Image (cartoon, rainbow, N blue to C red):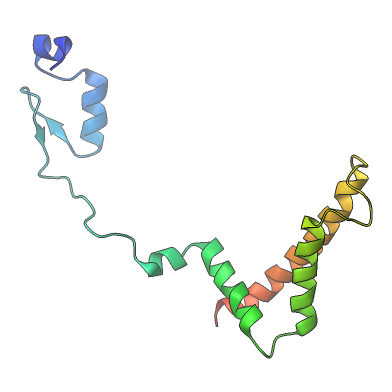
Length: 125
């Protein structure tokens, strides 16, 4: 027990207000009244994880790549765009300060636009 608590027997006003906002009432002896506090007892489930937008979009993108009826050209475009952005050999070398990055940015923007359109169709599936 710290000196200020032993001397006063209570928490400072700011700490008391903070705890009261969260449903804890401190008694003069310093023990917490936790009767009003409810703590979560379950862990997040898979359905909560799939509720995240990025996870749902990734799952839809996987459904697109696994779909046999989907456009082969579309799948190839997405894969080639990712390879182009990662690959060190570009149409305009990255040594040129701004121009070298603009071609990567343009290809990435086209690919992301296409992926966003495809994900909308495959999200509900």
